[in-house]
Length: 553
Image (tube, rainbow, N blue to C red; front, side):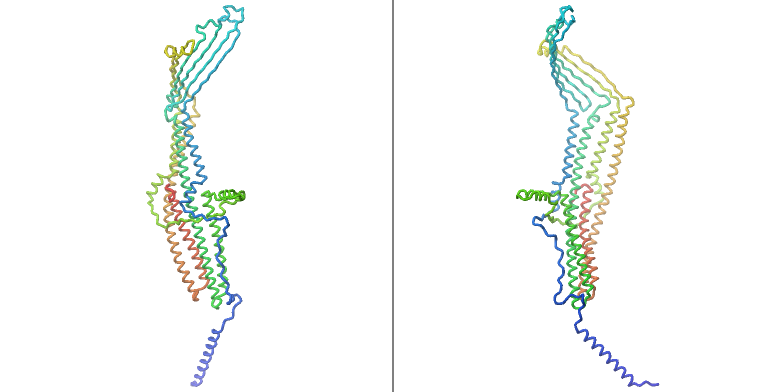
């Protein structure tokens, strides 16, 4: 059946009319103002963005201290209490040398004795009874004795003693003495030379050699402490730099979060944004503000750590100033440590490439490390002790000799004259031998010294291996830190460009607030990682320089 063409044309006309009416209705609806939602802010008075978290308010007595890394090291070395303790330990070690040398100091001794008594006697042999025992007689006696001498030890093991004696005696009632009163002058010299045990310098200078090595060890320990102090200052200083830079990054992130909130509010006002985007932006601001607060706390902790290493005396200075001004010095003295100080680092970490050849670094470390030198000296002391103990295992075979010369007359002058004539003398010469059967004490002491030497040699070898490993890892840490610095720097640059582009897209409606929030957080993390990588690179170099015994740069 054929269709009616007029009927088809009429249907098309009706369809066109409906389409035109719908288009006109849509255009008129688009041109009318949209009703505002309850969550949208009023257009007349837009809410200002929240202000950035301000730094903690300073007190009236707070002062700013600008500090370079060189100034920090100088203050630490001047004020560090551990360094002062090591200086005292070195003074003690130096005095041990003098104590050991005192073994060879000559000993001087002298005495003077006067004796007088009147004793009864009936003995005709006393020369006072006239040859009869029927009478009790008195036998008076007077004596004055003086002696002086010097004795000591030579480093060869020789012992010596030189003595001068003068004795005057008077027995006036006795007829048996041809000279009365009488004066006798005597000089005596004694020498003893060990031939086995205690012979030679190794046995007798062991204490002095060990004391000198201990003094050198104390000096090396002090030098090592100075190096570790410098390294600790570097760590604390650069961690303070990181804390300040990380706080700056967090404050910039807070500003960017406020800018995003302003964009979302403007879009919500014109009806092209959502109320939920505004809420998300406000929540992000609070999150960033919390990060700023944590950053300030971390900054204060980092500053306290540095000041503690420096042993900064700001609280004592405040107490002294208050006392001088007539204020409450007790309150100032009771103030917390480091209160009222703001440390501003003036040195910046370098990002220059650090080159070091592994073999050369190991050679430098083995030659310069104070703990290696200290361990070598301890091995040397153990060798000296073992040599002494082996010497003590020998028999005590000694050569002895003495010489005595004297003079006798009525007065001291005449007796000295007689002494000088050399007519009256005696001498002796001999050999003595002593040896404890079993000798268990010395044998076990020698055994302990041998074990101690072996233990210290093992420790030295272990320390050498540890140094080589530390140097190898130190170079690897520097290379890793440098690569990480370059990577984080590139990541920060790319995230910054990404945030800039995504923010522009959000302004024209091609992106969402959620995407911008995500990129902002990624940029915050990238910036923080870059700052951390910069400081870690500097700390890796500092640790490596300390590892090879060259001091922090």
